[in-house]
Length: 456
Image (cartoon, rainbow, N blue to C red):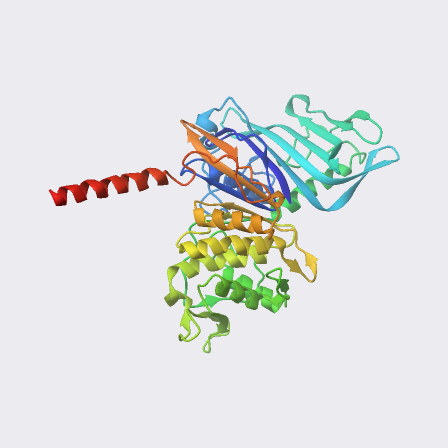
């Protein structure tokens, strides 16, 4: 699970400061205040890790990529080419990892890693790795740091903090440089084989990062499935039905709510559609005249006839990928949801909070999934329900992190919304959900004035 995230000189952000991430993290805020770009950089890192070594240090994509952000220069805050783009990502490992050969007759056990990277534009305005630092922790105490700096291309600096302090350098292979932003360059000999372990752990956390866009695919009357197992529901939710079919074929069973037994995947999705009041029945059935085509059939209420997903209403088609993604992602994954409340009634928006709480608390095969969900939202109804569930003790306030993003000129700003065990937010930012009281007062005054005019 990601535990903190920081960005400098990226899009609207000069510096986000350290952002603490919880099992359920929610970003509220104004339009164009930088909420989406927080996740966009993570998607860039994900596709950069999957790119061939010959690609630039950071791959901002193209029309065929997971995400397309244009050129490196276009992504720098106010076009500041002389300043580096920097980021710091810290995450808890699913299982402690032992680093062998860190020092003579010494290994280290780590349960958390932090990767700090600085990338600067070269003469061709392409991203060039300036520095990279791995820090390793055990029970919150730093054990190790490994630093690469392009100014010292012939060696790495290793610093062991515990149990005995030790600083040393590792010689790099001739003309060696990092192939990717997270992979330290090759060393002379095999004395630093533990460096590859750090890269593998980074690949794992980025592979388990999944993001669902705000604009999701339109409903179809037929969905093709050839037995494949998609990694996620897709950026636009286009693989949501394939994901349900794959999970059902694998006989995956999850506890879709704390007070419920484990259900098979299709039953679990049906449970939440019913709980949120959008459908009483949900089924995926093969089409009679095709070996690989399926139809999604639902009922709007118990006495209604079954209809196709394409006929039930656009909002349901936008909600379905959100529910599927929340439970389909693998254990220890981080799921980023962009405006999951789009096209949904206020009652369903509130229900989203209950569903996402259940997703981060879900068990699979009797084991906690330790899944993390990060949400971008504009929904007051979502926040009200979340506050209520914290007050009721359904979820601990320590498992929730709330932020408000705003804009001051060219710079985005972020403010933590401290929430207590009773669901109370101590300091409400101005215009968190617009200036409601001004509208109420203006409406009342307008009504008084019009009544006076009618009476004269």
